[in-house]
Structures are given as C-alpha cells and as structure tokens.
Image (cartoon, rainbow over all chains, first blue to last red; front, side, top):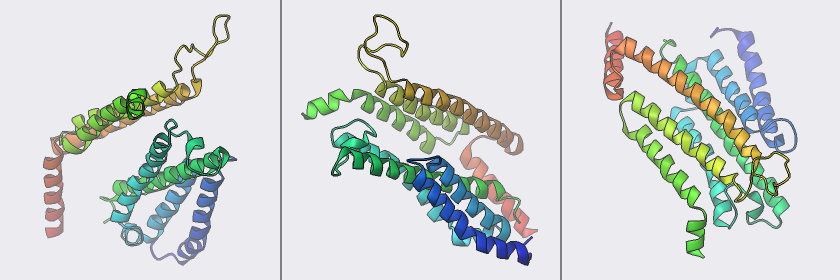
Length: 140
Length: 127
C-alpha cells in the first residue's frame, strides 16, 4: 500500500478536513450532539489513517512518541485542573459557575468547553498510543 | 475558614489519598498483576468520589413518596454504574493480556519481560 498514488493523494487531501471536523465536534459538544470523546476519536483516527497509509515510522516522525506521551497526560491535567480551580474558588469539584469569569453563565460555558478540550486531547492521544503499541511488532 | 475548607471537603482528601495509593502501585510495582490491582484501586477512588459528591445530607433515593423532602442526585450514580461496567471489562482485558504474556515469556515481572524482548529483537537483528 505504500506506493499507491491514489490512496496517498486522497489521504493528503482528506486529513485536514478530518481534523477540522474533529475540532468542530469537540467545540460543538456543549450545545449539540458530540463532545470530547467523539471528537477525540475522530482526531485520533486521522493519525491512525496517516500511520496506515505512510507506515508507522513516517507517522511517528510527524507525531512523535514524546509528544504523544505528553498529550496523554496534558488532557487529564486540564480536566482535573479545571475541577481543582473550581474547588479553590469556593465551589465543588467541576462547579463551573464559581470560575473567575464575569458571570456564572460565562463560567459554565467556558468551563465546559475547557473540559471538552481536555477530554478530546487525551482520547486522541490514547487512540494513537493504542494503535502504535499494537502494531509495533508486526510492522517490520 | 481554612479549617472549614479542609474539614468540609473530607471526601475529596479521602479520594485523593486512595487515588495516590493506586497510582503508586501502578508506577512502582514490577509485577503486572499488582499493577492491575493498582488500576482497580485508582478506579474505585474515582467511583467513591463521584458517589460521595452526589450525596445530600438527609436526602433519600430519588423516588416520590410522602415523607421524602430531599433527594440525592441520581445522575452521578448512573454515570458511575456505567463506569463500574467499564472498569470490570478493562480488568478482564488486562488479565487476558497478562495470561498471554505469561504464556509467551514465562514471567509476569515487567523488567524481566523487557530484558527478554530486548534480547529477542537484538537476536532478530543479528540474523
């Protein structure tokens, strides 16, 4: 599959749109269908598509192991960090209304959006990790 | 104020301590079964945390009856019901992987398995 011009070209055209759609699903999750899990899986599947078409080594050049491991933890840190900030400002864990914005409504919107971003980052990185770890031995 | 902040949220500290015990087991133990036990302790701490923040003092089960005036929040309980099922299935998958690892390496100690697989790839490269 590595020399197939059609698959490579189509993948090159599709990848940015897949990732933009994943970001749209994450950003839209607060008000409509979607959310961090679904959008994260879409972004993770774009990385898996890259690895399927160009091979694991090429995909690891573009999405390095180190960057992937950092993203794994950063998403969880954003989630628990927003929850802990709510506790520090006198609310309960994940009580967004207490976040230091102008009004509780704004805190609700931005807090929920931040949580979705954190979940999305972790899910995308974990999907990529599972794929690369499972395909490691059989690649060569 | 500070005492109130610490004592009023004692379930937060209990869940944090339990979570750190599980996290310690995950990162410091070399035995894979002990790692799985650590993952389970970690997950249980999250369950206890979510269930405890849904409890209202004096609240009852969310069923309409005469004496009930306050109800516990049922949403985190339902969320955790799903999470318990996920936890059991991840444990089952992890144990199945450990059995596979034991059959092919004859050990469940992580450092021994790592040195064995490094030797194996070196041998394959030499050939």
